[in-house]
Image 1 (tube, helix red, strand yellow):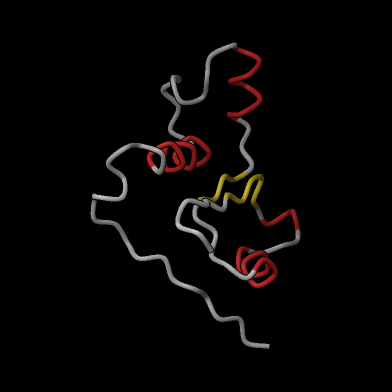
Image 2: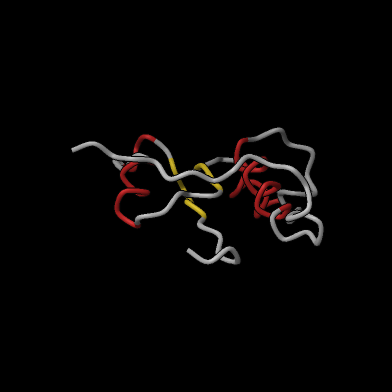
Length: 90
């Protein structure tokens, strides 16, 4: 997969019926950022305050921050964990 592509899994939770490993096995590459289903997202929309500007400590906010950081100019130059391919045993 090209280095300039980012795979985001949105609305991820146990109720959807798909695990992270299922998604990665299906698309054949690792998921970079997981955005879980969260009540903070519709509340943010209803309040008219962007989720990243609100002071909530929520898993969806954390995932959004990770996604935004990937687009910062110095992201490639910073040390971060190597992406790895998960192997799914059938």
